[in-house]
Image (cartoon, rainbow, N blue to C red; front, top):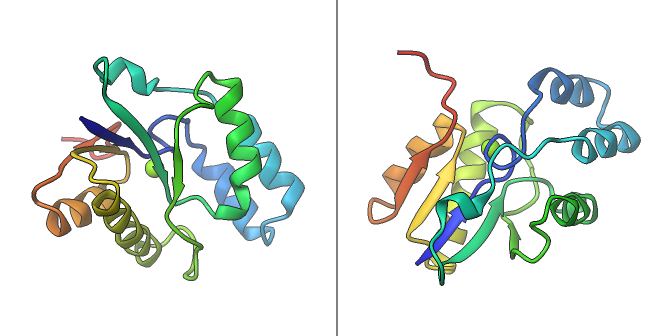
Length: 147
Ligand SMILES: [Mg+2]
């Protein structure tokens, strides 16, 4: 089976406060590199994969972060996994508009790579993907919604 995983907030931990500060500072490269280099792995995709499954990482991260992202994946034992960047952000970061934009890019990637199950932490993206691709199982990870 072909299984996909989001990266930020799903495989790597998320520090929303730090991300907001980076955005407010105008996204200085050094600060951004420090942020992405110091993430902790919170989920190993292999905990949720069977032998023979094809595992993909599908991320809305800006493609200019590819080098630091690949280095982080290598350091965390995931360097051999294919990583797909769904496209460059052209909308304000951290907004619902951004999340819907990310969802569109992810929906296209899930279709292109014939992903059957996808793990995602952002509830706006989860809702949009479930609506766009009812045939794909979109699993909500680490929801911030409290019941
Ligand atoms: Mg995420």
